[in-house]
Length: 208
Image (tube, rainbow, N blue to C red):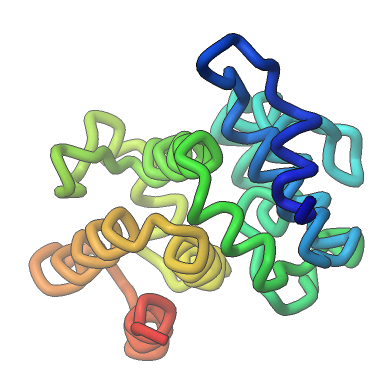
């Protein structure tokens, strides 16, 4: 019996003539089976709500926090939007590996949870999604001064969000977000995105 068959057999319940199984259980089993390192695999566990981040926070807890908390707290971002490189803002945040990236891309459930995190961050920025199109939201006037009108570290945070989404299977959403940022830079005279930020956002969504 192959490792994949073993996982399937141990995580699915027979209900003749079908098997009833949990997609995320199968995908998580494959992550462990095919050699994803323990630290990287913990990202998948965090998104499955099997374990909290290094500060004891679960994904749902983070997404329910208010804008002020999201603004002044930084160490949650590497857990919610992971990358292959170690994080400078949270040394406990595990880096992605290829197996975990593949598992996210294979799991609609995990991508939906990542998408929920993305939508929460759009609201944080005063933006909203409209059928693969991102535009100013109802809270734009309240939120823009926090990040869009002066160069800030949020440009780096946005770069991480865009790249993480592309790696984990939400490229279309990342492209829509980037498109909105470019339009803001071109059409809204109050937005002060420097050339380096725009270049980083283009690079973050580049095909690899």
